[in-house]
Image (cartoon, rainbow, N blue to C red):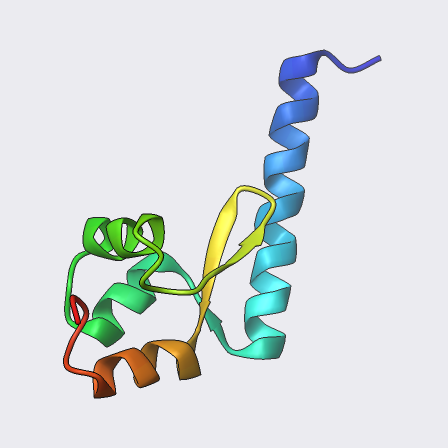
Length: 81
């Protein structure tokens, strides 16, 4: 039988693998790639998500971003627009 800590580690590993497959299939970006695309830092991307200024997708505990959403945001005048 697995301990709760082992189950948590397994769930995190599965979410990471699933997110990688989803990202490959749908062209989704992680927070660091989103930050590079927007020309800002990862903490800024996280703040924009909390403020509701950037849409994101949750895969388990991981957050992914659609490239088209980020590009549309860039056209509006930058990451803080």
